[in-house]
Amino acid sequence: MKITGVKTTLYLYNLGWCMGDANSPAGRTRGCGCVVELETDAGLTGIGLGGGGVRPQISALVEGVLKGQDPRSAQGLWQRMANKHFKGGHDGLINDAIAVLDMAVWDLKAKANEEPLWKTLGGSKDRIHCYASGIEIPLSDELMHAWYSRMATQYGLRGGKLKVGLDQDADLRRIGLMRDALMQADDNPMLLIDANEYWSPKQAIRKVREIEEEFDLTWVEEPARRWDFLGLRRIKDSVRTAVCAGENLDTLGDFLPYFHHHSADIVQVSCGMGGITPALQLADAAFGYELPVTLGNSPGLIHAHLATVMPNFMTMEVCNVEPPDGVFTTDVTVVDGWAIPGDKPGLGIEIDVDALEKQAIERVPPGAGPSPFGRRPGAGLYEIPPTEEEKAAAAKGMEA
Image (cartoon, rainbow, N blue to C red; front, top):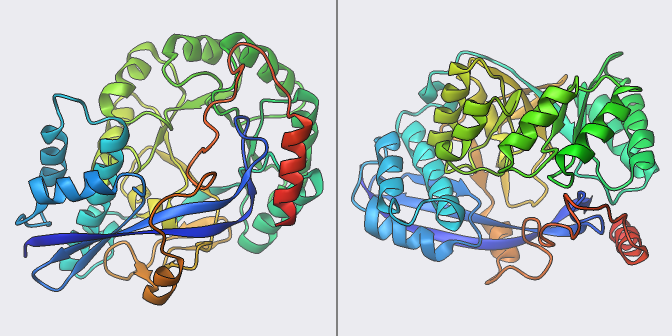
């Protein structure tokens, strides 16, 4: 079996609710995705999801590295793509392109084996612990509570992650509301908070300590800038709550300061970090330091496949149990707080061709890309609460 070419389709969809964090309290209601179809001479097609902003890089990698290669050599092909961009580095955009192609290659490998990815990886776990994550700063208290209530009662999720950082009084109130909602599934739910790199280390220490007086937190995520491994270490040593970090790093080299300086208690891993292959490498590296790993949200909850082979896996983020875009389906299900990977070959992802064609676009419209507002002014320096304009935009988004 040989790879013969690639097709990429960019599409637009509604998120399902108004999503935002400390960097974007106005929120957004639309998102963009990209379906990458890696074609072979055996009639099998590998599916990758993501990479909408790097379609030229995807095409170049297929033409220059993958075309004519056997996709069953998944790890070796990832290494070839990474080596191709060694001189300039494979962070950033090229990393996104490698990530989605590596996903498609693994999908092909498992399909060639006529088995689900988790079996190809050698997984033995039959269910994966997960928690609810609403990315919900723009939502009112009532809507936020209702969202976590639904995740607790409908899917049995016994943990939740709240976006925080801009208003300490509101954060304290909303953590309590999230806890109350999740207690419908568990008397002692897992409480997580995520500051999205908005605080400085001193701000983080002060705020987390205050929150700890009222709540037993499982972790604080990205309490300082991703590259501030010394600041993260100061926070880690100054609060009782575990520090969780690494979501926005790209390569193993980016994580080495974290490991060397003991900067995090919990390491974030994702197939967006260069692909499935480096996600497994990072999990192994963390295991060598006796550090648990958590997997972020993923299209179609495909991270459930990866979790089956990670001995130090802790829990997985779930934003959407059902794919919100209508373009694809997944056979990963969530039952009683656990994600259960299915038995369909490959990732278990199936594309609705008609829906994809209807939602296809040529370029990402303003406000629909990931984190379209960038990093909030004042982050790590001084606090800027949501402005009246941002509150009005969030309210309008909730009505959409």
